[in-house]
Image (tube, rainbow, N blue to C red; front, side, top):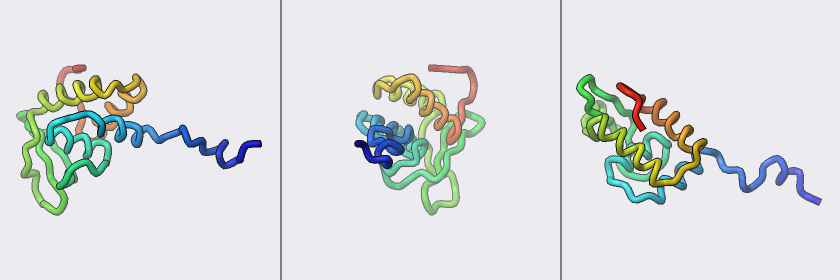
Length: 118
């Protein structure tokens, strides 16, 4: 007879964010993109950790890291970051639902601007 706790919380059910962290952590990516992935997924991939991201009117993606008052770190041009993001999702071989969760998290933390891509 099975344990009621195991039924309510089966071990094969992993939170989507944790599953994405595991899958994306296994893909070899450049440091700036790794920092963005860590920020989007709220993970601890790199140091210093990004606290906030903004996209300037000219398309520059700028980051503020822990304990710094300004957005003093240039990450990439937005279009380049977006291409890198979509390439990462493709190389990580995410399911459609995992890719939707990843894109929703990206949209929430950074945003999608301009024409739809991907």
